[in-house]
Length: 267
Ligand code: SF4
Ligand code: SF4
Ligand code: FES
Image (cartoon, rainbow, N blue to C red; front, side):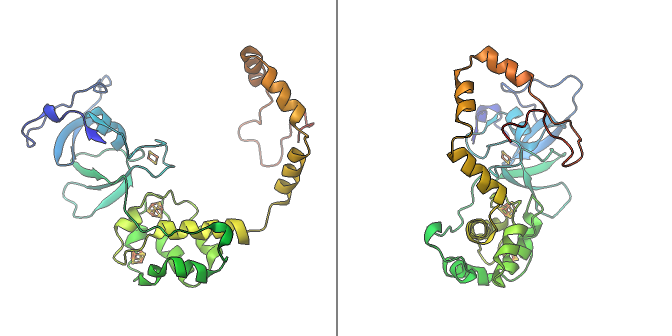
């Protein structure tokens, strides 16, 4: 990320309207002041932090990925006026507030162990050996308070300390690897990397395999869909567009398990 408008202001204490190629104010939009890296900008009050920063002239080279709250690339730390607390959020999801004072944390240099999943023992001891810092946790719960996804970070760390890989994998399922938990940890734990290892072990060795998935993989390998895929690849753009438009669609809000397409030959 770089400030594309460093020439915009010489006096950081002077309030001014941001300009730049995204600085077209929606009609009737009210603007509010925010502070980015110590500099004040006026931005439309309806924008997310990410869009507000772009409005202010910043260009995201890093610290931005999906823009949809999934990739974890845009963790942001901020304070609000008159509030001593640190707040945490994703820049692509959190809407700006007046006098928000913010900085982005696009990467956190947390320890990440090296391992080969194929060679690892699916045991808690294997996780302890790779991440002995797990036992430095003092249960302060700062990690949970910092998580923008509402993940119970302390709970999954505690589950792992007790050797419960399945519980840790399930509790950490919504983690997007943003690193905010690690940034607040007085025990210097890389919680999200540890949980990712737990989920990998759980997914590969512990979770029961889905029978229907194995059956479908077998059908694919036996060539059940080869002809259909071959026909698709030979279609031109117009034919593909027609097929797509005329496809059968499950109705929105259909009760679970109540809908089946008329054409079931590929099910
Ligand atoms: S658990 Fe940590 S890395 Fe995962 S989403 Fe929450 S704060 Fe981010
Ligand atoms: S922030 Fe660190 S020390 Fe505190 S509860 Fe979370 S993992 Fe444990
Ligand atoms: S850009 Fe992916 S979570 Fe914000």
